[in-house]
Length: 151
Image (cartoon, rainbow, N blue to C red; front, top):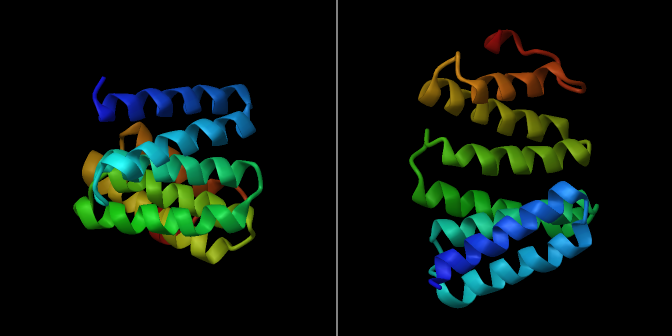
Protein backbone atom coordinates (compact mmCIF):
# COMPACT_ATOMS: atom_id res chain seq x y z
CA UNK A 1 0.00 0.00 0.00
CA UNK A 2 1.34 3.44 -0.93
CA UNK A 3 2.05 5.98 1.81
CA UNK A 4 -0.74 8.33 0.71
CA UNK A 5 -3.20 5.44 0.82
CA UNK A 6 -2.02 4.47 4.31
CA UNK A 7 -2.44 8.04 5.56
CA UNK A 8 -5.86 8.30 3.91
CA UNK A 9 -6.95 5.04 5.54
CA UNK A 10 -5.84 6.24 8.99
CA UNK A 11 -7.53 9.58 8.41
CA UNK A 12 -10.76 7.81 7.50
CA UNK A 13 -10.52 5.73 10.67
CA UNK A 14 -9.98 8.90 12.70
CA UNK A 15 -13.00 10.50 11.03
CA UNK A 16 -15.15 7.50 11.92
CA UNK A 17 -13.97 7.68 15.53
CA UNK A 18 -14.80 11.38 15.57
CA UNK A 19 -18.32 10.65 14.34
CA UNK A 20 -18.68 8.01 17.07
CA UNK A 21 -17.50 10.43 19.76
CA UNK A 22 -14.41 8.32 20.48
CA UNK A 23 -12.13 11.33 20.63
CA UNK A 24 -9.27 9.90 22.71
CA UNK A 25 -9.00 6.93 20.37
CA UNK A 26 -9.27 9.34 17.44
CA UNK A 27 -6.32 11.33 18.78
CA UNK A 28 -4.20 8.17 18.71
CA UNK A 29 -5.17 7.31 15.13
CA UNK A 30 -4.79 10.92 13.94
CA UNK A 31 -1.36 11.01 15.59
CA UNK A 32 -0.39 7.84 13.73
CA UNK A 33 -1.48 9.41 10.44
CA UNK A 34 0.46 12.59 11.11
CA UNK A 35 3.59 10.74 12.28
CA UNK A 36 3.50 8.60 9.14
CA UNK A 37 3.14 11.75 7.03
CA UNK A 38 6.09 13.37 8.85
CA UNK A 39 8.28 10.35 8.20
CA UNK A 40 7.56 10.04 4.50
CA UNK A 41 6.18 13.27 3.03
CA UNK A 42 7.61 16.71 2.44
CA UNK A 43 6.47 19.74 4.40
CA UNK A 44 3.99 20.97 1.81
CA UNK A 45 2.33 17.71 0.85
CA UNK A 46 -1.48 18.11 1.09
CA UNK A 47 -1.81 14.78 2.92
CA UNK A 48 0.62 15.93 5.59
CA UNK A 49 -1.16 19.28 5.98
CA UNK A 50 -4.56 17.58 6.20
CA UNK A 51 -3.34 15.06 8.78
CA UNK A 52 -1.94 17.92 10.88
CA UNK A 53 -5.27 19.77 10.72
CA UNK A 54 -7.15 16.58 11.63
CA UNK A 55 -4.96 16.00 14.66
CA UNK A 56 -5.39 19.61 15.76
CA UNK A 57 -9.16 19.31 15.47
CA UNK A 58 -9.13 16.30 17.77
CA UNK A 59 -7.17 18.31 20.31
CA UNK A 60 -9.77 21.06 19.99
CA UNK A 61 -12.73 18.76 20.65
CA UNK A 62 -11.09 17.21 23.73
CA UNK A 63 -10.40 20.70 25.08
CA UNK A 64 -6.64 20.74 24.60
CA UNK A 65 -6.59 24.21 23.05
CA UNK A 66 -2.93 24.89 23.84
CA UNK A 67 -1.98 21.87 21.75
CA UNK A 68 -4.50 22.59 18.97
CA UNK A 69 -3.72 26.25 18.30
CA UNK A 70 -0.11 26.01 17.09
CA UNK A 71 -0.98 22.99 14.94
CA UNK A 72 -3.90 24.82 13.33
CA UNK A 73 -1.70 27.86 12.70
CA UNK A 74 0.90 25.61 11.10
CA UNK A 75 -1.64 23.79 8.91
CA UNK A 76 -3.16 27.08 7.73
CA UNK A 77 0.28 28.54 7.00
CA UNK A 78 1.29 25.46 5.00
CA UNK A 79 -2.07 25.38 3.18
CA UNK A 80 -1.60 29.04 2.20
CA UNK A 81 1.85 28.13 0.85
CA UNK A 82 0.56 25.49 -1.56
CA UNK A 83 -2.97 26.59 -2.48
CA UNK A 84 -4.03 29.72 -4.35
CA UNK A 85 -5.48 32.54 -2.24
CA UNK A 86 -9.07 31.74 -3.30
CA UNK A 87 -8.74 27.94 -3.36
CA UNK A 88 -11.67 26.24 -1.61
CA UNK A 89 -9.19 23.84 0.06
CA UNK A 90 -8.17 26.72 2.34
CA UNK A 91 -11.68 26.92 3.80
CA UNK A 92 -11.22 23.81 5.97
CA UNK A 93 -8.13 25.29 7.58
CA UNK A 94 -9.71 28.72 8.07
CA UNK A 95 -12.84 27.22 9.61
CA UNK A 96 -10.85 24.88 11.86
CA UNK A 97 -8.89 27.74 13.39
CA UNK A 98 -12.08 29.82 13.52
CA UNK A 99 -13.87 27.07 15.47
CA UNK A 100 -11.01 26.95 17.95
CA UNK A 101 -11.10 30.73 18.42
CA UNK A 102 -14.89 30.64 18.83
CA UNK A 103 -14.58 27.93 21.48
CA UNK A 104 -11.95 30.01 23.27
CA UNK A 105 -14.11 33.16 23.15
CA UNK A 106 -11.78 34.91 20.70
CA UNK A 107 -14.66 36.01 18.51
CA UNK A 108 -12.98 38.83 16.58
CA UNK A 109 -10.20 36.53 15.41
CA UNK A 110 -12.71 33.81 14.57
CA UNK A 111 -14.91 36.22 12.63
CA UNK A 112 -11.99 37.34 10.45
CA UNK A 113 -11.26 33.72 9.52
CA UNK A 114 -14.93 32.94 8.86
CA UNK A 115 -15.24 36.03 6.65
CA UNK A 116 -12.26 34.91 4.59
CA UNK A 117 -13.74 31.41 4.24
CA UNK A 118 -17.09 32.91 3.27
CA UNK A 119 -15.51 35.06 0.58
CA UNK A 120 -13.55 32.11 -0.83
CA UNK A 121 -16.72 30.01 -1.02
CA UNK A 122 -18.67 32.85 -2.63
CA UNK A 123 -16.03 33.70 -5.21
CA UNK A 124 -15.06 30.13 -6.08
CA UNK A 125 -18.41 28.39 -5.96
CA UNK A 126 -21.07 31.08 -6.09
CA UNK A 127 -23.67 32.33 -3.63
CA UNK A 128 -26.06 29.46 -4.45
CA UNK A 129 -23.59 26.74 -3.45
CA UNK A 130 -24.28 24.84 -0.17
CA UNK A 131 -20.74 25.54 1.11
CA UNK A 132 -21.43 29.26 0.84
CA UNK A 133 -24.67 28.81 2.78
CA UNK A 134 -22.81 26.85 5.49
CA UNK A 135 -20.23 29.62 5.80
CA UNK A 136 -22.96 32.25 5.93
CA UNK A 137 -24.74 30.33 8.68
CA UNK A 138 -21.69 30.73 10.92
CA UNK A 139 -22.56 34.43 11.10
CA UNK A 140 -26.20 33.76 11.92
CA UNK A 141 -25.33 31.85 15.08
CA UNK A 142 -24.33 33.55 18.30
CA UNK A 143 -21.96 35.19 19.11
CA UNK A 144 -21.75 36.63 15.58
CA UNK A 145 -24.29 39.12 14.31
CA UNK A 146 -24.88 38.94 10.59
CA UNK A 147 -22.42 41.40 9.18
CA UNK A 148 -24.01 44.10 6.97
CA UNK A 149 -21.25 43.60 4.37
CA UNK A 150 -22.29 39.99 3.73
CA UNK A 151 -26.11 40.16 3.81
